[in-house]
Image (cartoon, rainbow, N blue to C red; front, side, top):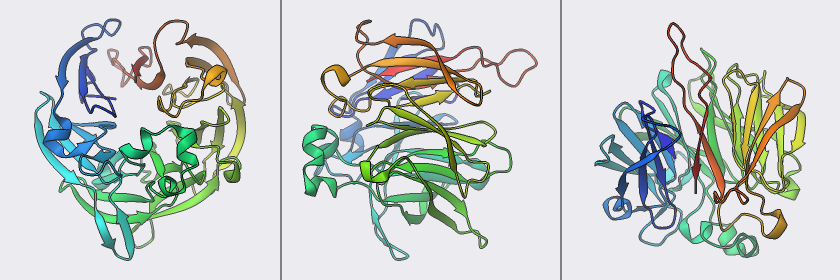
Length: 352
């Protein structure tokens, strides 16, 4: 899910039936109201699995995961206006691009407006993400059908400029938030690498692995990352071992892990307050991929971070509360008079 540009509405998508739900969260965040349902995403776009919702002024970019033809990984980006009206569609690039095979896969969107740069990553199609995880990892052919590219687009023209080879399914994209920085990080799910995307001396965008996350041979499955506002630290969650790891990224070319903690039997998303002192975690990756039995913990947890260790503040058991699976978090903010931002209003949960 994702907020509109005014942060008053939350768009949330379902990966199987492709419905998109628009909630009014601005009127009363404690009681969101469903105001619109978009049921023809697949019919209008040819894409399946509306996953990432990224706001532009008056617009919402929606990154698909799959397509209606073969339910494989080839997909694209749809553009809607804030009224929920379909505006345009853009296929992910395929074929050879300067010696790199473009797979046409998609997952996340990250924009750096200073560079007119839209960066996308790649995951897998409906055939895979709807499969039981245990069955999937035993299916050698299915495991070949994961994305291995990132694409840099000209944002204003919505045209792909460069396809970068990034094996192992690069997922979440996080641009540095520090003024003057123009680099991004991602983590590869299957090969457990942190990958830096940055311009070289000639101004060409390049992607290179800069650090391992845990023991890649064990496939800890990095799922989410969160960069600190000062771009000095990075949280990395790994689903299989339920851990979060903190990396010192003062030098983004050489991240160094300085801390780790087990959050639960499984862990998915991580979000933090602007000052970095509060770190939130949720548990659910995908309904068909979450663990089973006692390991299927479903929670939202808050920890305080003092720069050295995480200390748990609260834990909400989504099973006990009848809230389903805790998948994603989105932070809202209401500026206070005379200030750029007010971190006081915090978390809205989008459940799968």
